[in-house]
Every structure is written in C-alpha cells, then in structure tokens.
Length: 507
Image (spheres, one colour):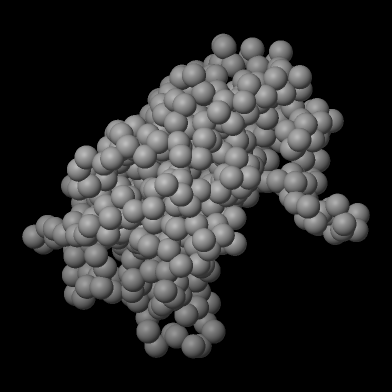
C-alpha cells in the first residue's frame, strides 16, 4: 500500500518521535504508530499546541518529530507551528489523514483542501525533503484501512551542508578600523562553546541574546544597553551569528546601509530586507573553519560606555524595586539555578536580555524566535524540556492566554520543579513603548494594548497546579520554598514604578 510505504519512508528518515491528536480519520495511523518499537509518543487534544510541542522536541533533540492529526480544520491549526519551524529550519513533520481524493471540492464534512495547505512553508513530498524545515505528508484514506505493521527501510543519511569561509575570513580582515560588533542571536547547544571562544579571540564588542547561552559568560565583551550604544555610535561592520537577534539595533540596520553586515546562520535567512552577506551552516563549524582570527578589539570604545550603563542600570533597578524590569532581575536570580530557562515573546525576552542578572552564566536558554509570534509558547517550552526536572519558563500574560490548554501535556513531561512564570501587566504592554501610541485615540490605544483584567489563579487550580502571586520585591521570597511539581508564579509589577523606570532609563 502506498500510504504504508510513505510512512515507512519517514521511519527511514529518522522519525521516531510523534505527537498524536486522535480522530476517526487518522485512527489507522495511530494504530500503525503503536506498533513501532521504541517510538516516543505524546498525545494532546488540541492541534495548535501539539504542533508547538513537537517543535519543542525538534529544538532540543535536533531530530524530526511528527505531529499526527485528523482531517479538516485540525490540519489548519498547525499553520503557526509550521511557519515557526520553517523560519527556524526545524524538522517538524505533519502527518494529516484526509478523506479519499474523490471528496475534494465537494464540501462534504471534514473535507477541506488539505493538499498543499501550508504552501511554501513545508515540503509536500518526502523525496523533496532534506531533513531541514517542515514536511507535510497528507494521506487520503478510508477510515477502516489497515496499514499493517511498520517495516524499516535502510536509514536515510542527511549530508551536512558545505560552505566556503574564505569570503568571511577576508571580510574580517578588511576595514575593521571602522569598528566591528558581533551580534549573537539564539544558538543551539552544540554551537555555543566554539562561538564563545571565537568571540573571546576576536575581542570585539558583543551583543549576545540570552538565547545564545553566552550573555553572562562573555563578561565585559557583552554590551549593556547595547541597542542604544550602537544606535548612538554605529559600527562600520556587524557580524551576526545564529538566529536573527532580538534587539532593536538589528532592525535599525535596515536604515543604515553604510554598515556592512555578514551573517552565519543555519537557516539561510539574512534577517534583513537590505543587502548583506550570508554563510549557511552550523555556527560552530563555520567559526572553527576560520581557524585563528586576528584580534579586533574595541575600535569605537563602546566598552567604557557599556560599563557606565551597567552602573546606571543597577541604580535604576534599586530605585524602582517593584517595576517590571526590577522584578525580572529578581526572578533571574532564581531561574538561573534551574536546568533551563525558556523565554516567551515578546516583552519578556527583551526585558531578560536587558535586565537579568549578569554574574552567573545561564547557559541553557531557549526561545521561539523564527517568526517572533506568541502562538504556542507554553507548549513549545514543554516539548523542549520533556526530560528536564527543573525547568523555568517566563511568559507574558497575553502569550499565556494564547496557550491555555498547554498544561494538558504536563502529565507527559518531567515535573521535579517546573516553574511557569507569567508577567501579568494586563495586556500587550510592549506597545506602550511605541512612540506613535501617545498620538492615538483612547479607543485605538485600548485595541493595541488589549487590557483584559484576568488573574490566572483559577486557571492554575483547574489544572491542579500550585499558585503563587508576586506584587513586590519582598514577595519573591516565595520562590525559595516551591512545592514539588509545577507551579504557576503570577507577577504583577507596579505600573507606576514601571513607567517611572522607563522614563529614567531613556534619559
């Protein structure tokens, strides 16, 4: 049978992880999966969260993970996860059951146009898929079909990408008198050590995102309030390593064509709509291929300015102890003791980058930054931390409201000490910092910031989770004696102190 052959080809391509969402149409596929020896199988009732949980598995294992859904709108629910996997270039596989082909275009129940539903975001044939980015395998079938027992084809070996480092080596030697800054976005764990030593040898200023795992380890090479420092004193050259950086200065580069930009990235995406150069490859392999690099140093003297901003930052956090940035600093002191930290979009990751503690390296930090969306963040965190007993996740309130069904998956992951922190500032407060918001009508401002007035204590109780509320710095002491299992920690920063902090920080 052709369907069974396609499924066995997935096994040959290394698919051993499955997240299943049951339905009448995909029952034969679920039965087939149950017969796979050594398969790693999770289940969920909600397809959007299942897709992000599967994405989280690919992020931590580097191996493909398949999410299995029934026909109809269940398939459409996976579009956000597929898009995120496309921009991260993660091997997320969608296996969708479909009604037989003669139902297409009829409008019959559960019969939508599933073939090619993800467009350019997913390969639609196994033969076209190289094990990078998403694959969609759509299976038209009768409900009572028997797919038999899984066989096992000869395992498919993926060739590692090749690249030429000569253009980058020449670029690093040419024109460095203009000033060179390294911007490090998210890195996979296997890339971090080589990139760390490369940055040390280069000696240039670095703006490393928390998800790089290098933010604290780089010491004085890391710029404090780097976005502002670089905007005030732009370098002539920027070397980006890893995923697209979180910071504002990366976006400012769109309007700075005189700044040369070179990217080292697995995804192949430049991250800019302007001209720049890109090497596609694993960052560790690329920088190792460069061999010894000449020290560049701090040509534009960003380091003294960074030290001043470090001191000013500490003073402001102390002056506004119940502000959101100050509470993020306090939380980071506890989160750094966990096995890993996951940062949700979009204000939490920015505030962690700017205000989390600097003294102790937090090397295992993850985030979903492919499309910068807020969909499925809690589910992706759970998927990425299945085996980790002490895992922290830091999310905004709106992001959490987007993924309220995620705790269903908790029974399938380790829960020695899992802490789900929600920064509840009553809506999308990242928009408060947009200059244009002040000139908008009151109604339009409300539509932008979406205040909701919700408290998540009853949500935590519905899932049987411990709940703690933090409204000031003194309340953070509750984190010293958390119950075993999963705790929801809801943080309510002082709006007045937060506003005052940002006003002082901008000076």
